[in-house]
Amino acid sequence: MRFLFFIPDTPIARGGISVTLDVIEVLNTNGIPALAIYDRPDFEYNIHTKRAPRVWSQSMRQPRDLSGLKNKARLIRDIALGRNKRPRKNAEPCAAWERQKDDVLVVPEWVSEWMPHNLPSDLPLVLFNQNPFSLLYAFAKPGFEKDRYLTSLSVSDACSAGSRMVLGKEPVTFPLYISDELYSFQPQKKFQIAYMPRKRGGEATALVKTLQAAPELEGISFVPIGGVTTKEAARLIRESLFFLSFSDREGFGLPPAEAMATGSVVIGYAGVGGDEFFDASTGILVPENNVTLFYEEAVRVIAGYRSNPEGLDGLRRKASEIIAKRYNRANFEAGVLDAFSQIESLVRT
Image (cartoon, rainbow, N blue to C red; front, side):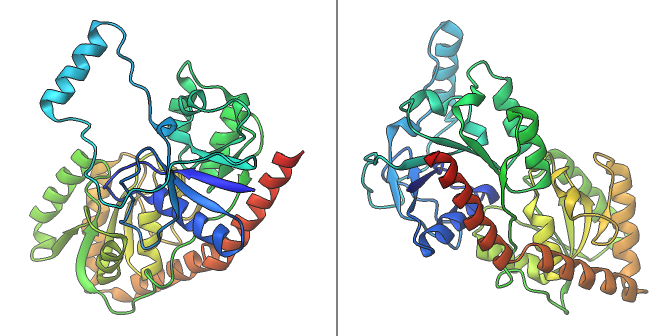
């Protein structure tokens, strides 16, 4: 049996794509053929540390609705404003997908509404749910057909709940992992504050600006992480003593978990998906959307560290140990292999 995983042609770092490439690597390493499938031959997602054998197919491309004057006007406007531009070629052309009789396509939740309509009706499909909110949005659209999916894959408690809600049955699951190579515990860190500005963009910008103006935090560096490779993002997180979590409607929320693994003091939101690992034992949790409390807690914790570091040093070491125990490579590999063994059995029955 051969598994194909759709990968979009985005030049922006996405945790879900990195997870997918890690899954492909585990399968291939263990003798289970797995490929990345793109909607074009000349692009490869090269931000992550892993690569994958790839093919392409035009059936991976979302059809655009050009019926009616409004849709046509929207297309003309997007072209004129340079919106939705596809990234440039960055790889040598790969082969076109030639379907084999035992192929199984793994479909991300965010394209689960339209992609099945582009594919042969007898092709087995597995829904890969890495964000329950994206799945709900897809389900709400008129084209979603839940019976088209043999089963679903889930990577977290929140994703599993979303799969049960939409598909009405338990998903096949495996745990994520936080690389101990990239996100190892750092006893000594720079007294600086890292954050990812693309999460809750406007709120993040405003909050950081108010924190920079706080007298208690004068002279402390703020380190935005965006538009960089996985390795560079990991380096910046490893160096930073504090990490502001702007997680929002996540399936899991890798960045705060990665920061905890390195021994950063994480302050902020769990974003729903992070509820399974982000609590008072692993960080400074702020109730969702309470930006004023976020500000107050950040000032209190960061300013107070210099006079009383012992408590927070204990917290960050314990958080790192919790993340390492739950989300390690061994658990991830065993979970992936078990999940795809279950899927193979379902396909063959």
